[in-house]
Image (cartoon, rainbow, N blue to C red; front, side, top):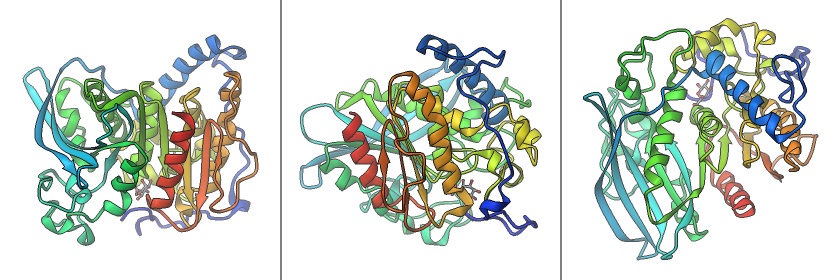
Length: 407
Ligand code: GTR
């Protein structure tokens, strides 16, 4: 199930600050060879080192895209929300060496007649869960079984229609002047361990799985970059103002997408936790060992070397946040979502801030974790909201404010 430890994990997770081991974090502003990063030019070199380390030890290396992208319009409604907005469906076909994979985008944008900034995010249960009417087809891809979302036998159904609209409040987003683009993550890469053969991995059959091959998180992130390729040709959008966001495992994917693809102008992690915004060395809630055992397909196989061995990691997750600099990044926690280590997510923001300072920017404005429901916004934003694991309207309000502030 989502957001909780599986019963197979015998040892209780640690939820006490007193149970957090002593640790020291690797310095984002120190080269692997030891020299100090003093200028933005140095950082651009250091940045490459960090991307390579995350590729090798954590997410795996994604291939450069050398295929063809073809966009097929599935439907188009210029009179959505009583004419206030447009909604359309686009199928992105990715072709390479005679192989093809496709995934469907659902796009919403205000009818302002001007290009607008937009949010882009993967969804968990299919585009039809973001639509109350039948124009948006039910996904035919593999899907996780969830009674509340109307899926069983790993197939989606009409019963899930509209169920996720509260988590994707497109009406509020549109009324604030933003577009929204979403796609179903299972169409990019089905979320089960199949040895990296299906989803976007299928486009690269010559790549056998090795210790540093791209896992599913990297696959989802890679898919987001292909969506960006397409969005650059759309007239309704300002492609230089696209905020990529994701919740939980898809928050991990959004962070990795923002790290490797600097076209994403703003990056948002909603409750991403372990392998996302949270510091691995804290071993609080979900740990590296737990996540690798539960989800062997998410990361590079190399990440297993750090099971119960976090101190040996050449990086930690604050350096992932730092890879966004100087672009704004927002990290959101839920106070009851202890599995994702809210405090570890906050400390990660603090530890990423020196890289923003190098650019003359304020990263996280505070060093003490802010009280519940009191967001802090510098070039790094953070809030811990009341409640648990989820992408909620409160979170969206902060993301819209943060985007207003920076766009
Ligand atoms: C959990 C997993 C977390 C998080 C969550 C989710 O089972 O342990 O890392 O990704 O799923 O995606 O909701």
